[in-house]
Length: 410
Ligand code: CS2
Image 1 (tube, rainbow, N blue to C red):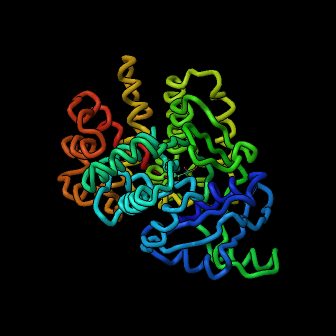
Image 2 (image 1 turned 90 degrees about the vertical axis):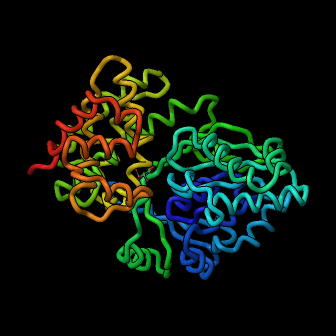
Image 3 (image 1 turned 120 degrees about the horizontal axis):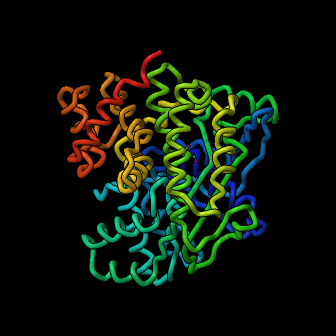
């Protein structure tokens, strides 16, 4: 569920690369609009993955998607979930969706499908969250149960016994595809692809949990299976996503449009490195290879051939910052330090949302209502929308307030 570019550069790519790929097929459902499914279905669900390295592009046709479906087609979803041959549902539905329990949300659609599976006696299944949330399997489980409670106690019981919620940490930078990319595929590959996907060469998938109905041998395509996923999730969410958000806000205020441009600006780069220094203190596990990870990440961010738009990353800040920066700030405060570099991430976000730009956020309404967003009280009010208890910590609010405006100058 969630037929976006990331699903295709990641789960579809890992499945395509697995040695037993021929035994599996993905039915991919769109989220809000049917468009991606229509375009893909018109080309037999085949698409080109453009692997964009710092020197050149590589092209590969990905064949693991068997069917591309409009997400509104809940009948087809229920039909597929009621089939015992369906083993896994992956979710790439964006972080904010896990807070939605209304009847039209993708997770409500999933519930409808799971209920069909229960009625058909089709057996256990794995739900695999691939969104950038800490403990995403646990969060998915909790949201699904909240929705199920409104349907029937029988469904709640069936889910508890039959659905495994797998947590994963996913990683592959996948910028939005442009018209030039389509032209490039035509020129270099000699065919027309209306729906290619561009991604960096790097790809990582770390998973933790059971697959009661089987799975492709993703470990033979580079995926890693671990017992304790939390440190890996934190490494990805803090270093990569945290730095992304920092650059999205500070970078745009400094008139950059892509990650590579922001990262090349010494002011942004210093802010990122200082934030990384704070985050690294809370990732002491040697198996995380933090210095190597940071080095590799710096090279990924510096790839000038990837036009990863800061505006795209800036969306849904309240939800994202809760995962990407708040845990580091809390850990710093708990250790008796100020967490200044992490506080600066929040200050940059506040400057961005108070700058008059159009905000895309699940709390956009509340953000707009904050009076004097540039002031001390406004700083507390904005912080409250990300983390209410922290907003009562007057010292932290004061510190963030003092950091406002420090990344915006020329
Ligand atoms: C980005 C992520 O848009 C965002 O918020 O931080 O999509 C990021 O590019 C991916 O997590 C990379 O794996």
